[in-house]
Image (cartoon, rainbow, N blue to C red; front, side, top):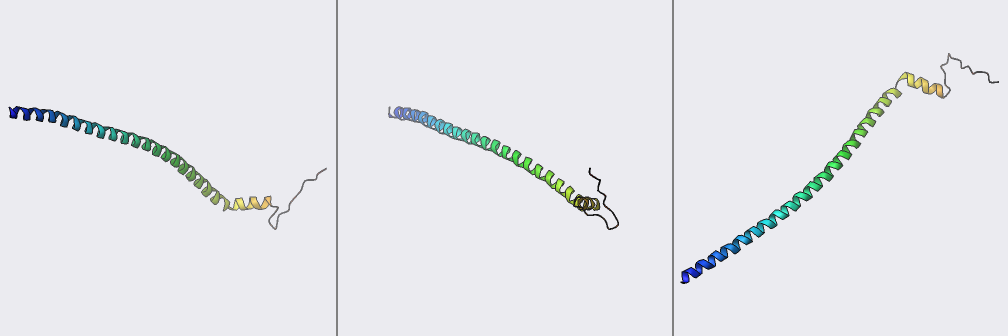
Length: 102
């Protein structure tokens, strides 16, 4: 009879062990699910930051191209002549005519 009692205790112990293992697994699964959720949120935030920074980078590249174009234009003879005429300068052999105002 003593053997039967030990077997019954082992069966009861096995059920408790099984429930404990399942409980621990559920806890781990819930922790992993929460971490996945947090990582997805972080990933979405980082994607938005990347989008904003990419737009700023594109704008700066456009501005750089515009400034380079302006730098090249400023170095042309035509620009220098136009700027000098706006300031009132003329070539030595030119005359400046002013219209008569009534």
